[in-house]
Every structure is written in structure tokens, then in C-alpha cells.
Image 1 (cartoon, rainbow, N blue to C red):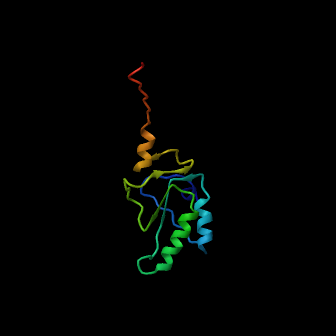
Image 2: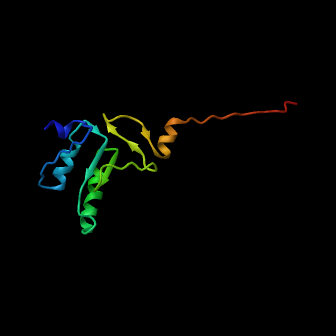
Image 3: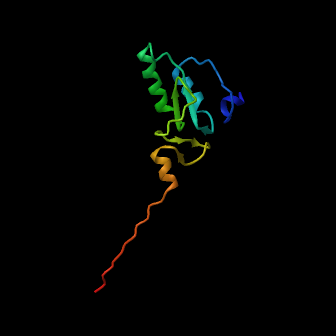
Length: 112
């Protein structure tokens, strides 16, 4: 399905049944884009699902991974994409660094 591999913006969600976390990871990474991913679990009631999320997050080829949400920007966290989802960073210290440039000024006032 195109919606599973294209970079869609808007109120769109692709849902696909998979047989394992490994299959999910393979399918989620099977795209030339990598802006965000959102994984939904019952982590609040089941600590094992939080551990599964962390394993998936580590293997995902995306700039941002959400757990049980997909709609929040935290100014303290970098907003970035990988693959064909853009280059560079916005938000956070890393985004600030992208917009600024250091300059060194060396002065010698007395010359004698």
C-alpha cells in the first residue's frame, strides 16, 4: 500500500497486522522516508511492552519515535528526519546550533 511507504501529511494512519516485532520493524523501515514513527502499546500496565518499544525504537530508521502519541513537539528534543525526510535539525540545542555560527575575534591592542 502506498500509504505505508509514502511520506503523507494530514489525518492519515496506516494500520497493518504483523506477526512479530521483527516483521513490524522490517516493514516500518521499508520506506525511503524516515521522519517519525509512532508505536502504541499498553506500557502503562505492562512493563514488557515498554521494553519492546525501546527495542523497536532503537532499530527504527526515523528521526523521532513516539510512544502512545504522535502529536507533540518538545522544544527540548531535536526534530529531525533521516533518509529522504530532510536534512538538518530544528528545535532543541541542536536546531539552535544549525541557525547560528561561532565567530572568533582575536585582538592585539598594544603593538609595541
